[in-house]
Length: 487
Ligand SMILES: Cc1cc2nc3c(=O)[nH]c(=O)nc-3n(C[C@H](O)[C@H](O)[C@H](O)COP(=O)(O)OP(=O)(O)OC[C@H]3O[C@@H](n4cnc5c(N)ncnc54)[C@H](O)[C@@H]3O)c2cc1C
Image (cartoon, rainbow, N blue to C red; front, side, top):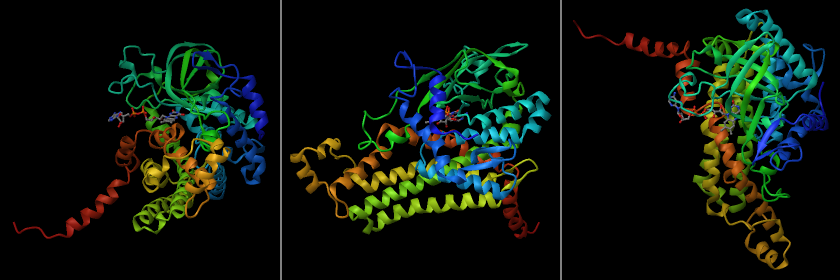
């Protein structure tokens, strides 16, 4: 089934999760000022499926039409269709709103495609769980959030050594009907207005089995609580001053499990922490898939940022300067590289018996590269707009006062833009490089798939682990051809 926006709104309205905001329990996220913007955008996501035919596809795994983001690619052609559909969605978002429903639809599809692997490692019950969770998600077109990272209590020690071992989510008790979990996750984007959640910890340095479980439950299940961050939404009617915030402000929350019962049929991974890295992230290929999705998000974003840089510099005449051209050229190089990766990641995809997945080296490499390219593009925008990014009349009403309007029309215009267009353009710029939403996105661009230092190092220590010796061999051969001194 593919829903319409209105179906999602009705669903989340009747199943609002337990969200706390400024001392209050939120009654209805669809009406709350901090959440109604993303709720509207998620609704738009569903409606986009009815505006663009290529976002809907007959899905043979469930025998009905679903979102393209649920399709299990069995050929490179399928994978290309998914890529092109996602690019369409993220071009609409201008590369923002990265935790739209399609993100975790992919994860549900991947777990389903690897259900056999879950069965082989954990037993047949887990295989069935991966299948049923996917079918439930596709048939109801459910919106998932997810949480991976433990609260930042003490990064120098694993959670099992913390003063309270249940800051990290852990199993407190096993029962015939499931397990009871307690603890929290640092951040879960979209949680306040999502219908379902995945909890999937990446506990690389902890071998305590109580933490090793992946499960999916409704966000409104008893004992699940969310502490939402302050909303960055603009004041009512702020679309003129904050064009991005008023469309694409996502929300983030701390996820808390207060002795929550997780039924056995909602668990796909249990008690084998040693498998998290190799099985989940490499064999299942989760790292490849989510990084591939990020390349799509950031490809769309870089195109938008290039458009901003070009529009500003051409309107102000700075595009004639070689140093400004060089900076715009830098963003264009990033776009070319991302486009090449998205093409090649499908061309050179891995064709497994159960799924065709994007090329891991390109997808992970490009996504990690973008941890630096996207903030760099923001920095370029700051540099080429100079101090002019700051003194913009306070709001739309300035244009409505005749006395001010006369001055604005004269002094706020640019060589290539009238004053109204110029103010709109610079409001857009500020919402990218200076507003709270802009700053939150920059933090997201750097950190959302892990810390950049660790991720770049991981290219050496893990991603190229089995391939790096090929490069050393190139050096070795030359060394071997060099003469040795006579003994
Ligand atoms: C806006 C935003 C939205 C997000 N949304 C989600 C979401 O929906 N779901 C989700 O699961 N996650 C989400 N993330 C979280 C993201 O997964 C984490 O931020 C990321 O994994 C990095 O972890 P951390 O922030 O705890 O930083 P850390 O990894 O703790 O890094 C903090 C600093 O400490 C250093 N450091 C930490 N450990 C080591 C070490 N062992 N050795 C050397 N240096 C170290 C790092 O280099 C870095 O400078 C989001 C993040 C942001 C910013």
